[in-house]
Length: 80
Image 1 (cartoon, helix red, strand yellow):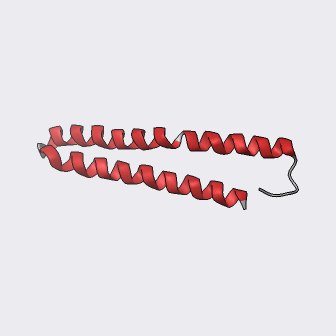
Image 2 (tube, rainbow, N blue to C red; image 1 turned 90 degrees about the horizontal axis):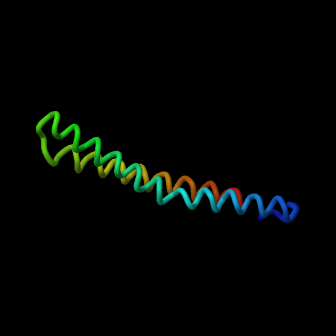
């Protein structure tokens, strides 16, 4: 972290970063679950049983990992 920040500011920034990191798992599960749920619903509607479920689950999973990468990059850039 930057040397010119006070202890209070550093502590506040560390808490914010901890909160950001703690939500990453929830985001990954939520986005994957939304993709899975949406895929199941669309597969039932279009009668294409496993295709859309697998596709939307993978898209949700990729979105979750992309969110993790973006958040970690923001945290890393903020510490420099």
